Structures are given as structure tokens and as C-alpha cells.
Image 1 (cartoon, rainbow, N blue to C red):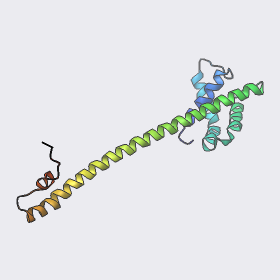
Image 2 (image 1 turned 45 degrees about the vertical axis):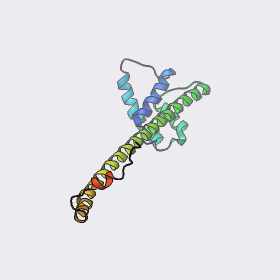
Image 3 (image 1 turned 30 degrees about the vertical axis):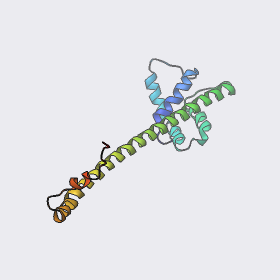
Image 4 (image 1 turned 90 degrees about the vertical axis):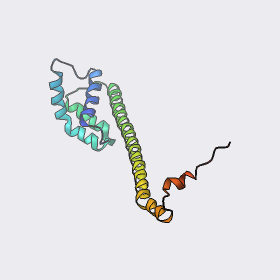
Length: 154
């Protein structure tokens, strides 16, 4: 879960609490969010390190944000939404990471093909061509390999 940033986790929690009316939006929301993010940073870092105690950490976040919750049912719904969004965020990052690795591997494979091709031609130029010229003067690599091609049926 280390690929998810602290800001992303905070945004998920803040948005869910805001959607359920537990955080009132005011004119200076960005300043309040910045202060709340700084206050919640230690808890968010705990969530980053170990998401097994996610509900306990979310309760602590709500206490830091001074949110009173009336019924356990609404709290469970909020927690389920937050946990689902964090898991979705985690899956998106994993999916992105896998696609990025696949692209890197494909690029490395193409580079390997190019290097192999260059090495082959260097080997032919420096070793095979001189050997062929010593044994068969005036003949080249192309002379011998052109005979390997299939003839078309007439």
C-alpha cells in the first residue's frame, strides 16, 4: 500500500466525510483541509504502513477531526465507503504499476533485439567476412546466405 500517497488517503477520507455531512464546507475549505491533513498525518502514515487496523485508525481520524457520530449504522456505512475507496485506490495503483512494468519490459525487449542485431552484424563484419575472404577470395557473407533462400516454383 506504500504506492498510495498520504494526500490520496486523506482526500478519500475527507470526501467521504463531506459527502455524509459530517464535515461542513465553508469558504476557507482549503485552509481547513490543510490543517486537518497536517493533524491527521501520523494516523495516515499508520494506515500506509499497516491497513489491517483500518477501522481503528479511521475512528482516531474522526476524533482528531472532532466529528461526533450519532448512530453506529451510519458510521459503518461511512467506514465501508472509505475502506472501499482506499482499496479501489490501491487496486488502481497496482494496475498502473503492472501496466508500467509491462511497458518497461517491452521496451527492454526491443532494446535487446536491437543490440543483438547490432552485435550480429559487428561479428559478421569483423570475424566472418575476413574469414570468408581468406578462404574464398572475393566472396562475401551475402554470397553464401543468398544461396539459402528458397527458390520460387516456376
